[in-house]
Amino acid sequence: MKRSWRAALFGLAALVAGSPDASAGAGDEGALPLQSPEATGGRRAGAAQGPAPPAGWGRADAEPGAQRRDPMALQVGVDLGLAARLDQPPLWTPTESAGLLLGAQLGLRLGPELALAVAYEHLGLGEQKSEVGLTGAATVSRALDSAWLGLRTYPLRAGPVGAFLHIGLGAAWQRAELSAVAWLPEQPSTAQPFACHGSTSPGPGLRAAAGIETELSRPLRALGAVGLDVYRLDDDIMDGCVPGSGSASLLTVRIGLSYDVDLGS
Image (cartoon, rainbow, N blue to C red):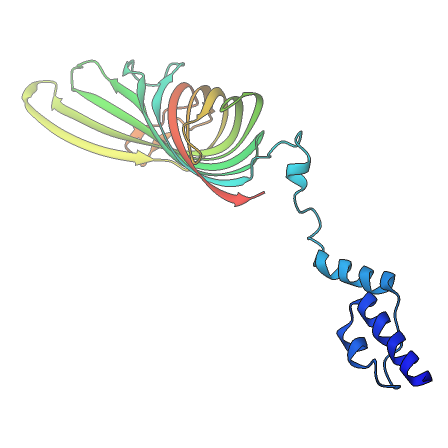
């Protein structure tokens, strides 16, 4: 009689707790000890919740005021423009004081307000012609190649458009080509053409510019800028051919395109 009551009590407890192991052992005196419904119910609730999400999961959605920060990006760009010399070159009067400017740059955008870049540029320094003298006439064409390290900051932004300031430090190599015709004063019919070219070691350069940049699409940007370049160049005879251009100040106007490769935030 006692065993029957004990078996009935074990079966009732198993039904309340929902444990199949307990009901299976209801008729056995070695059955597992009973557990309270609160303990078993709490364990089931914890199992249903699953693993905790990683830290920060969904934080961007939970903070509607948070703004997306532009990631770091590698920039590859090209420039096209004009450079006009503001001062007077040595030797002869210039017939052309402006030249075409071509450039390429590799930059690192550190964020929405700062960028660094290295650049290479080639530009024309114009042309000079001598007067026809007793012994001949000559023409000099000049060009400049330069390498730059620049810093660009964006003090103003409005959506995809930003105004920037640029400063740079560079080194420049000047080149010149001389073409001439010479003759004896008494015999102009003996005119002989000749040509030569010369170059010098690099001289320092400084740059300051201001401009506007706009985002055409996510990876592609366009810019326009106006600046002042100052070069400290020699005016000595280059390679026994022609005098150097001397120090020069240039007003530059350029447009450009750059392509951004995101490096992550």
